[in-house]
Image (tube, rainbow, N blue to C red; front, side, top):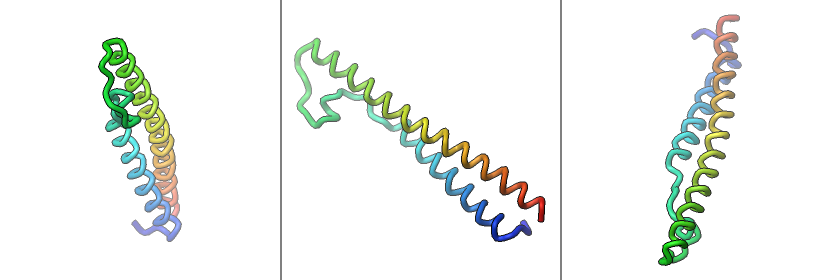
Length: 94
């Protein structure tokens, strides 16, 4: 690659944003969907209805957390793709 300093900077930004997006995707896949009481550091519930509700609340909280991370990852992936395209264009202009 025989580009300018701007091309190399754009390349570094492309790699950085891509790695950050990958980290966010990985983090979203590792979100716990266990009992909600465990998220709060409380003792497990023993009542059958409470156990069910606790599990459902944990599932919803985990799903919301994973969805938020997925949304951020999608934005950063898009930024990385745009930077990659800009790097390619700048490289071809030199």
